Amino acid sequence: MNLAGDNELTMTNVRAEKVREVARLATRTGRARSGEFLAEGPQAVREALRLHLENAEHGRAEVVRAVYATEDCLDKHPELEVMSNKAERVHTRLVNQEVLAAMADTVTPQGIVAVCIIPETSLQDVADTKPRLVAVLTRVQDPGNAGTIIRAADAAGADAVVLTSGSVDIYNPKSVRSTVGSIFHLPIITNADFGSTMAAFKGQGSTILAADGYGAADLDALQDASAARRAGSTEPAPEGQPVLEEPTVWIFGNEGQGLDETELAGADHRVAVPLYGIAESLNVGTAATMCLYASARAQRRG
Amino acid sequence: MNLAGDNELTMTNVRAEKVREVARLATRTGRARSGEFLAEGPQAVREALRLHLENAEHGRAEVVRAVYATEDCLDKHPELEVMSNKAERVHTRLVNQEVLAAMADTVTPQGIVAVCIIPETSLQDVADTKPRLVAVLTRVQDPGNAGTIIRAADAAGADAVVLTSGSVDIYNPKSVRSTVGSIFHLPIITNADFGSTMAAFKGQGSTILAADGYGAADLDALQDASAARRAGSTEPAPEGQPVLEEPTVWIFGNEGQGLDETELAGADHRVAVPLYGIAESLNVGTAATMCLYASARAQRRG
Image (tube, rainbow over all chains, first blue to last red; front, side, top):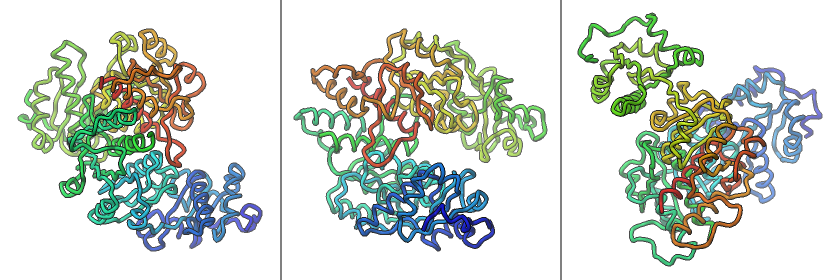
């Protein structure tokens, strides 16, 4: 269907059942009931549609169920109209400003939202691809932190992100926003059991590294050793120290408490980001970014 | 005075002028008028008092003007009472829960706040110390981002943070909170003129590096070259590439627009944090952390 051409279809009733249905995706119950979540704003919707079109080409799962946009927004971002029209089985509708505001979670939804399908990726699906770099979030509670780590994992070229069952629901609008589109860039597994996650990745040969402020291994020392090896040093890695070049699964814990004893026991090594100043700790999102990039740098620059 | 021993002094009137005075520190006008800001919660107050006591020993400027705490909080954190009692010229008062809530900006101020003095550090003071690592924030707008960068600068052992005049006021409660005490760990200069900042640090021999997604130099390549040199490689740095081991001033720009042409022109080199995945960019706080740690690692591990 032609999205912008059919003005008589512009939705203007903020009380319509459809509007309420979309708005309900801001709640956990609403998402659980429908298996859908909301992407807001041109960038997120563009990434959703891009993945939808790419998946369609390869016969993979659908990503977007519906797109709602104001005429203004499509005037500013004509590529979004082109993509929406190309995407098969995506319900697309023009809406006015009021309807969009009623559907969206943000105060300024920037003219467009997409109803997206929560993907059903299994741990085994991901483990079977023999990933080289995976981030596991266990009991991370803050939606912004979870989103930041997903964005950083994407930037570092990680193969997947796993969230254990005690973690924040990353399909809530705040998390989705803080991924800045990265939620559509790599497989994300939610509600995973911690033990099964460790078993799945150990089974395919990954080293499990726990990010832990009290860890015996120093991330900077590991990075320097790795860079020296890649520059031709033949010195072997010190005994009992991880080798960043190897396939790696990083575990990141709760904001306040870090990783608990069971979680630490699941790891092959505990690694600390060194603190050179007076600060007592780093934000989990910051620490995760440092760890994931350290692995990315070691694995990719050979 | 003995903070906890003098129960008759407990403040209970939420409408008292003093309570309103403290509450006004949540506003820019209130802070400008009094030259004070608010630190909330046990950790921030502890770091403020620690710096106050340390400065007193060295005849340096006062940090804390007043501490307001509930009896519950002092029972849980007896060291805060000890520190308060030791701190000279700090007005300390017990308050009830309601008064504390009326003073504080947070919903859960965790039983204690301190009225702190906005320090008057000049650019020249900092440049005169011949700093090895400085972060300059120009037009960074989000209070959380500014706070995160100050915390990261502290963790990386940076010598100072400079905010140019177009940046967020880091003495607003949200920024202070997001530094998690780091605001008391290193000199912070606010309202600096960009040109004067560049001149001051170039004058004492620092290399100016602009964090710029389109930069020609790749942060990971620079780190690898630096690690190889430190591991004994005698290969000189490629021409036109910065050497991370040298004294460095990093410039970080606005969240949406990055650095503008004038700002980029002020730098000796433009450096990009590489993106290995599909993500189009990194959050400025994340990028800043990566850059500052890259320098810290290069400068400290010789």
